[in-house]
Image (cartoon, rainbow, N blue to C red):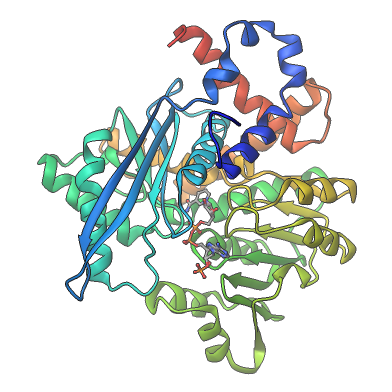
Length: 434
Ligand code: NDP
């Protein structure tokens, strides 16, 4: 705490992992002897930089850019970039720390990192977003590369932004280095299913949870928070598997649509018009109702998928969800449930799937994009989606087996933390004290 004052979210994420590791260090004293845990908590490198750019009115704007290269024992640093006014070092470090274990859990050769800026894309023109991305990459380019650090998208950074970032990287370096970024467009080195991967992956993971209890999505009522990339494709996959998403949200409120969120309309509003959920409700007419502010978790459901942002589902929400009959909460976002909410869910017998397992499909598909870039290949949608489903099944089963082995049967939290930790810790032991 004293070394990292004020980094609340980082402290929260470290506590969350360390809480699970007691049985591991008892069984394997070698991790303590070589200070693996203390080394894991210290990023290998943190970069903070100025991002000056000119807005449409000709004013100079200054933002702050971050890249935290947390751990490269398993492969190049890998993790997204977030553009949101709330971004500061504590957020980037929490996301980077989570990313180490998530990436490890996928079984793929990727280390952990994260970055972003306090730039707020809301209300900015496409030209302003492009100039910001170019200014951001003008510093970031010297720190990243196919074998070093491979950023992707996150909140506020989608296909459009990755395009501007890649364009500037290519211009500065004079190299068409496809493997330097993931989440690229399909015509310039991107992978099928990457856009859909985090949302689809969360639903595939939830499907495994259902399957383990002999059930399926068929006929289930689902509530999703957020209406961005992860939320949109979680909704799509739930509908494909026979469930109905009856509500979703954004930072201004939520929409209830009892006959199921109209995905084509949602995509039109969010991806084409870059509008708000209130616009969705207006266009949808009588079928949907919009509530300003309020808590989407009050809408009764069987399954809740928080897909917006950290600490958005609090203890009181957990109590309401359980009371209304929800039996599964799976995190599409990173750390959307507060520790108090997780405790309340667990006490109420609700199955809880943590983000580092349930949302790992995004980064796993990024690793598939890197594979395709390295071999100058491109796979079909069907093949890539099957790989994703297989990876999510693998993560699910690894969580349960590991939880069993370390004395917490059925706990996806213990399973994800311990399995993620052991793989990266073993690599760190093998590489020596570095
Ligand atoms: P987007 O920017 O596409 O969407 C974010 C959504 O969350 C929007 O609906 C946004 O509403 C809402 N939101 C963001 N911040 C807040 C806030 N402070 N309060 C309330 N609502 C908020 O981001 P993604 O869908 O890509 O990311 C969502 C979550 O998933 C994040 O936690 C991210 O780290 C995680 N994640 C994303 C991956 C990916 O591949 N994209 C991979 C793994 C995890 P509004 O538009 O009103 O701001």
